[in-house]
Structures are given as C-alpha cells and as structure tokens.
Length: 128
Image (cartoon, rainbow, N blue to C red; front, top):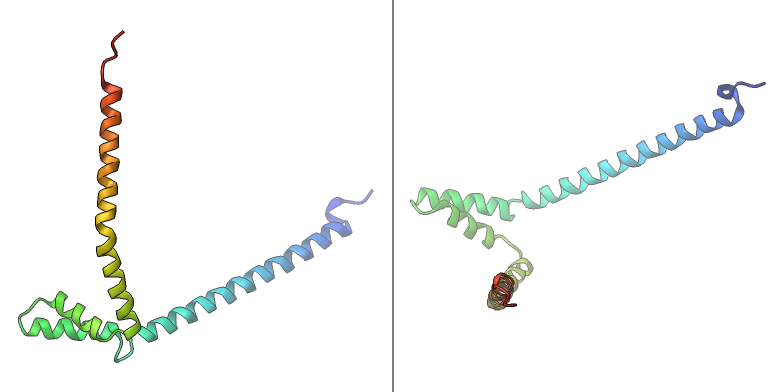
C-alpha cells in the first residue's frame, strides 16, 4: 500500500500549487509596480512648475505676505494654473449645481412633507 504523502498525484499537486503561488506573486508584483509608476506619473504632473499644486502654494504664500487670506490666495493660484479644459469642467459643474440645487431642495422638502403626513395619519387615534 502506498503512502498518500508519497503518491504521484500529491507531488503533482504540490508542484502545481508552487507554480500557482509563483504566478500570483509575479502578478501582484507587476500590478504593484504598475500602480506605483502611475502614481509617480500623476505626482510628476501635479508638481510641475506650472502645475496647480505649485500655483496654490505660490498664491497662498503671496496672499499671506500681503496680509490677505492665504486659503483664498491658494485657491486663486491653483485655478490660474489649471488647464482650460479643467476650468471649463469646473464652471459647468458649478452651473449644474446651481441649477439642480433648488430641484434637490424641493424634492427633499416634499419628501419631508410626505413623511410628516404619514406619521400624522399613523399616530391619529382610530374611532371605532
């Protein structure tokens, strides 16, 4: 009778598991390296001399030295260094929020009114 630990199928299983583990580790390392490279590229884009991050820092420092609000100066400095496409998208988002804000507020008020009516009807005494 052969021992289970020495059977060819168990050895084959061990070899297959080692290959699977090796492949999983290789894939994990590749994914991690790719993610770090993408993050590094994004950080390079943000930290360019004409990028929004340096513009924000420059605007904040200038405002603080002028005795003005450094947060507002940082926002202005960041917006100045944004691309035209990004500025357009920000303006569109603000306009969309301004247009849809009252609609959302009205929907919330109607929902609260309906909830109040349902609560009042449920709590009303029943006459039998």
